[in-house]
Image (cartoon, rainbow, N blue to C red; front, top):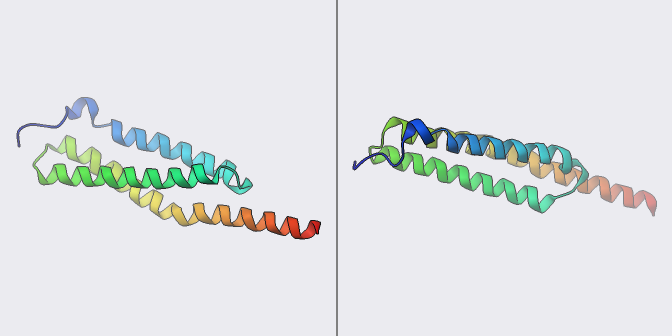
Length: 114
């Protein structure tokens, strides 16, 4: 090991905080716009972006661990990545179902009009 990638006392909190804030915003938007069937591309695309970022954080953290980086460097990356992958992965079917249900309601409403 040549040295830490970054100063863990100053920067280790950033990946988890960013992922948490962006993930929470995404969840709030999904809860508000999803049942209305709006912003489907944005929110489902955002889900895949967040899942990918989480997996990259997890991979970077495991790579840091394997290369002997200090605890403060790899732990923040692994924790944020693992939580993101588990939480977003578990909520993926729910996000898809929200839009599927909204589409079904829209189709039933059209049938009633006819």
